[in-house]
Image (cartoon, rainbow, N blue to C red; front, side, top):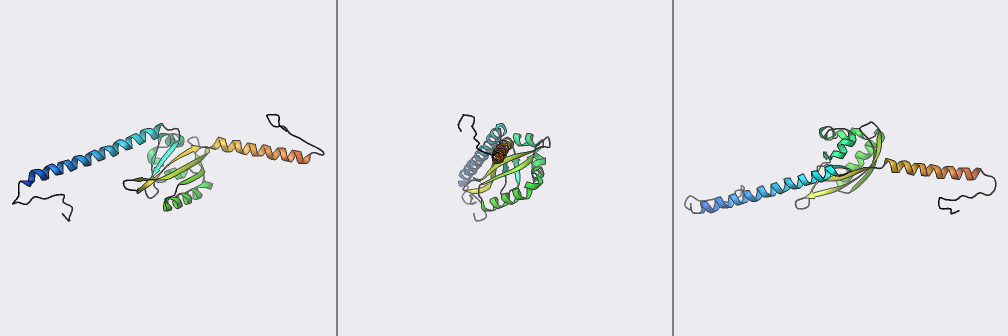
Length: 191
């Protein structure tokens, strides 16, 4: 029993043999049901992740990326095996790479949620701004199992914010060059 046996039957008591066999078969059935439930849960997750219009990823406990959904792979134009084990890092803009790696490692070491914004090379070679959010996930009895996260392309938002900022700077510079009074109206007609 100390070595892990579930049950035993003494030679002097063969009547217990039937009960031990039934018990072993029942335990095996329960284990198989649990394993099947886990497989079905993983299958459901992958189906949901693959139809989501966001980039979804998962790591193991060491921070090694082990899963990318279809949207991620299509965005990158890479296969799952090309992206795994750090291959995806090659797609990060060189100016953002070390910062992203440092943030990820720090968050993984402390099991904290993380949010990172970086440029990621798309399948056509263009770099796009991605906002990634990751959170630790747990299995069993609060056992840390890795991170799961999502990424959204925010390039258009960043470009619009930059244009808006440039417009405000231009208006301020123009007003400062005017001699005398000046006023401006917004789109609703307010001064």
